Length: 376
Image (cartoon, rainbow, N blue to C red):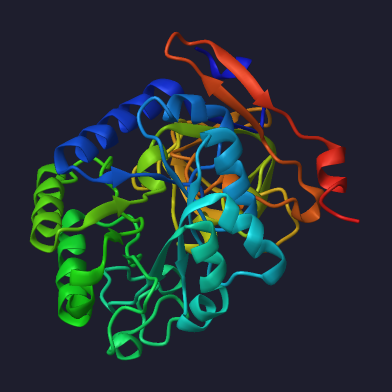
């Protein structure tokens, strides 16, 4: 279909590509005999959950709101992990969760009696201090990380009432990085495994990326599961929505300063694509190239917010950009909509789904009321 029929700006999920990822994830789950559940922090587009539920049945939440979304739209209790639970939220979170993981022993002691009353399966997040993540902002395994309990705190064994362990130290990683993590878990927390019933290996398993060794993933998971007689759970976010859609934008203006041309779009990197500034991540485009060598026209891509750094460095184009031209950012479904803001009152892009038959349908549009209602 033509991009001209899609409003701008707009996040567009391609159903056929989502189903492709879901089929692969389902296959890994079945072959490895493990549970793979959806992490809402990476993909919370609930209008697509009826499709997701055809392939998997569980999800993980990181807050009361995500837990409620799981109950309502995934139609199941959630696996819940919060960095810290607030007293006013905990009863409701506990009621809507099947599994509940604590980030510290202090929080476990504070709330364990309520978990016992609710008969929720309790876990502790551990920090094996092993990760391949090089960007500090995304690395939870650093020695001073606030995320996860270290081996010294659990030298006395698994506390009474704890049934599982939770490890999340990867980000868009390979199965070989996971293999190193599993070895670190055995070395530092092996004394806890005989009493544990389940091990949640968190997210960061980018099994849907081209070249990922899913056979190796299946083998190491089956081996670890058999060796320690554990139920294994994975909760990727990016893997579900990896390369499943795009963000269509439109050029509003072209500004030239000291030999640098900037095409200003009707969207914002800080508001709608923050990973492009934080990671930093340079998405591919339909109309241009990340590689500028040999390209006749070079343009920075500028967001519409007033933040000075709301831009990406130059992309290469074969033709001169003009007002009204489309700029389409690829792989813009995971960790995009979940991290958007309305800074400057910049409107949130519309959200739509492109069906396998080529039909486009809008599922959400945003206006002044959405901006106003977030404030007071």
